[in-house]
Image (cartoon, rainbow, N blue to C red; front, side, top):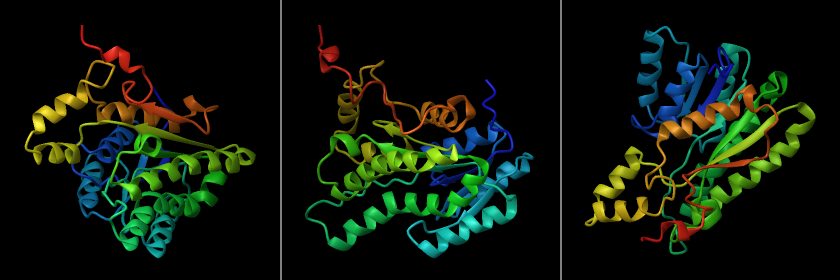
Amino acid sequence: MDLGLKDKVVVISGAAGHPGSIGEVMLRALAREGAIPAVVDRNARGFGYVEELQAQGIDAHFAQTDVTEPEQMAAAVQQIADKYGRIDAVINNVGVNDGVSLEGSLDDFMYSLKLNMVSYWLLVKHCFPYLKESKGNVLNIGSKVGYTGQGNTSGYAAAKGGVLALTREWAVDFVKYGMRSNAIIIAESYTPAYDTWIRGLENGEAKLKSITDRIPLENRMTTPEEIANTALFLISDLASHTTGQHVFVDGGYVHLDRALLTQA
């Protein structure tokens, strides 16, 4: 299906993760649809990703940026705008479940908010003038933790709860400009970071099975590709009257009745 994203400039943060990470998979998906991905990430891995795409004749850009630093964020957006003259969509994809609990320091808590929520606000703030011109839209990548909590991760939970609120606040702000704002909520997706966590557990395989057994649809995790597919749909004109929504891509993990999981 043609999503109509060809030559659309899509600013995406957190897309320089390891191969198979959600951001990296979304980056590849954008490129396949003919969009122009502009990656904002602090990891130099992004240079390699963009060079690889350019070698295939795909236009792409990487702005190495510490997303917690306001000046760097402003400079990154200016760099992208100067190069392309437009911005059509923003995908906020930064997220680190950093385990900053009530026993953590205030500095660590504040940093978690800066990384996982304030960076979203900064990127949208600086892209906003260009999004108004293009009648573009924003997609925030969220987490079930913003709804359900998790335990021992106050910073991440507060940040992701804030992201959900910002999604709807921006949808209200955007109405008069004909713009949209939505969020995808992820529960369990087997990314490289998830694999590292599982492998670090003494009972990793058993823990993994206990998690997947609780996912109603097919007792499996959501793939990064499934998340990317939904993301691209939501930023496309095929979702032209969808705004202020929290779209769960989670195999029913958060909402469906646990009676579904009762073993016969």
